[in-house]
Length: 281
Image (cartoon, rainbow, N blue to C red; front, side, top):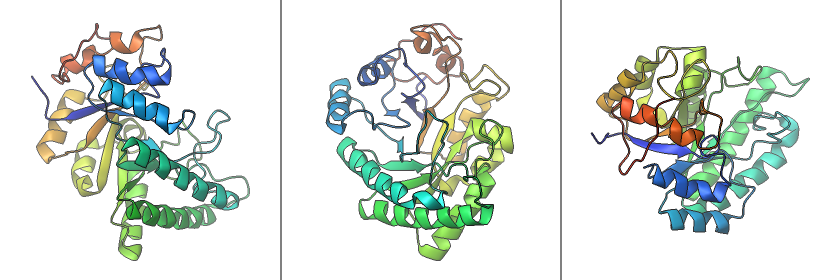
């Protein structure tokens, strides 16, 4: 059957045995009609735009620059001493989004630096989100805020969906940031708060994007404790119309492991059009 849900392949975690420009075509060959990225900035926007065109793909999401990822930084939006860097990153991200046709950008709050209290970090984040939200609105773009669980990333400032929702509602009401939305990552939400179905339903008007991975292990749906067959049906039932981003790490780490693990789509009755899949992980 063809699912009403639209799935996007996260090319920062899937098809990683290939150079990034070749992953767009690999995702298309596997049946994905959309892709997303964590960070596109290591490649010229023109190169990525051509790769998207050649693969007949659309890029639906990428993140704002988040500091030195390799060194363990997970966002700088709450760093009082790096506001200038954050604002420059917003401009860079918007330039890529415009060049690549991306409709929304995700912000990672980050881990407050040593010596910075939670209140100061939150004030910095609020100010940065105000600036970024207004800048993106002028370009017709949406800004997302993603909670990251503080088990995997100790100290992450916005670690629960409920905390992110409170912040989003505050900024929408106080500053009219109607283009500010929640990125709901099912894996991170499960680790911190659970009650996935009712949370998705309650916050649906504020959810701009959903991402998936199973728990434990952050691998393919169906490899862990989350009842994805139910959850996919539930998303359709409550009227979610955004993309479901596949941001998991394939259990098969060998070359071709992404393709070998795509059997979960068929197992859950969620086969993208034209999909050519391997065996289930």
